[in-house]
Length: 453
Ligand code: UD1
Ligand code: CA
Image (cartoon, rainbow, N blue to C red; front, side, top):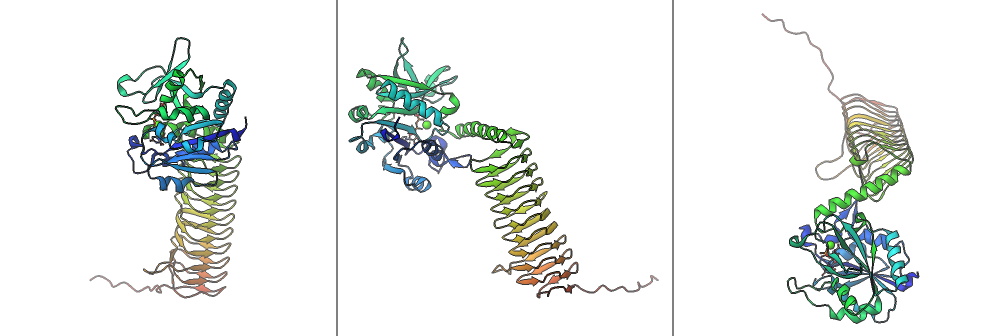
């Protein structure tokens, strides 16, 4: 098969009424990627020259998400059905003699191998159209494939709740057409009397009437799931998550309870890392080798080194953690936190837009915001960087090996020099030079109690 002989067309102009959403259906996310990106990614396993994408409802939003050199957008101004969406691509058919591969943009789990099989079957049999089908126990709202006594496909019946069938063969919404067949027959599609839409599926009947060959290519239902409602989205999420987690386990990652974790598409995990139940990894997360993520750890868009131990219920976003670090339990690393090698961030510690150097420790109940902490620093329990004066944020800089006593307030902008020692309970408002002891608290006085009469 030559990819240059195939013209893929993705239908993505529909609103997705049954989603009941402000967002166009194809932009709803499935494990972190918009539905349509799943379809485009599968197509990109092949080297097609271009991918035509039909957009319409909130076209600008859809375009913005998927814009790329290999995509050509076609606008369907009024959403008059899947057949009409294809009619909008007529211009591309005029001088093209190969296979037109049409894919509904809301069928995200269809696999590369099945696509290859579809194209090969289609080209081998020289059918006018080959459609992907799947056997189901309940036809739901899918179109049902009709066959004659000899088993030849003769049409597709659109299903409503009234004529819903138990065992059925459904139309998956992915088709290979001979370009010439489409060119000649798209014009015969007619608006449906009830819905007023042009059904792409009527092309099957037209092909049969013209005595053309119509072929089928069956796939497991798992690949055929079409997303019309949020229930479909949840089902597809479950199926895809299971595949993703199984792949990770085969790659050498321990996932103690595979059904309880939530891991998105752009997550990478190194060998021998262990995920406890309830771990949630979202966006682009890169986790190193030999890490332990305890129950309830939530990480979004972050880079994490090797041998990092993240204890229960810690929340980490847009942060970088280097090798050998220990975090939590109940720690909160907000955007811009950068934790150096072997450092320790303990329970109820919040870090925002701050660097913590190698081997430094903030073990309990601390807030570090807009801070730069050197290496080997000890930050006592209850230490707070007072980084905000009500209008602006200011920096706190702490030198290597400094020791900050418990319950210290560092009023920024402020610097604490190397090896300085801050007495517990201090409110530090002036820069502390290196190797200096600073105490800024009221002196303790002891007085003789008055005797009661
Ligand atoms: C369609 C098929 C049905 C099949 C099912 C598989 C038709 C008439 N029916 O039904 O046989 O079983 O898919 O999932 O084709 N779209 C446009 N423009 C439009 C309308 C839709 O681009 O005017 C796009 C949508 O964005 C969507 C795709 O086409 O990505 C399918 O549309 P949808 O309305 O979901 O079709 P189904 O009712 O699911
Ligand atoms: Ca659909």
